[in-house]
Image (tube, rainbow, N blue to C red):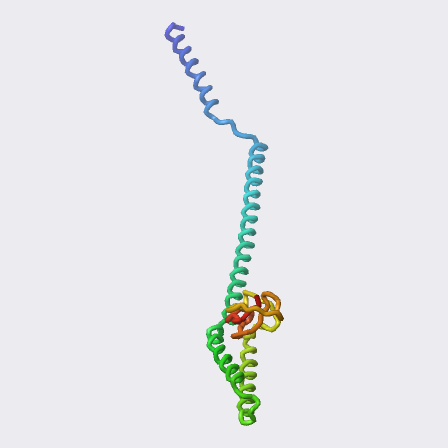
Length: 194
């Protein structure tokens, strides 16, 4: 062989060797079947965990939504109940002076005079009927007899010396007080012992 042929043949050998090495390096190593299954099992476990977390979050959200709906329903029921109970408040306040006037008329009428007997009986029956009617709708008279001053339902307009009463005890009622379904609509105006 000539020297030129030798050089060519060496070049071919040198060229072939790097090409073979490149082919082996370029082809990525394929994972084994076990590695693939293990990776897929890990992915499945990860997705199942994410699913469980999503279910838990959804369940908690549903519970919160139901609780909120129940709270709204209860608030609406309370508002409707209050509206029903206290719808008569303004009307009741307008009726109280009528009751006061009937009581004043009874107090000022001479009950010993036989000529006024029919008038007194009529006023008493009218007042009783009127009080029974307003009581049906939740209007109650505030008790002031033999009781201590309660600032929640009584309004003291004067204090007097009274040896028969303890300090803070109601001596006299100037104007009766009333409640509507337990809510104060007019305090009782009273005179209190010092």
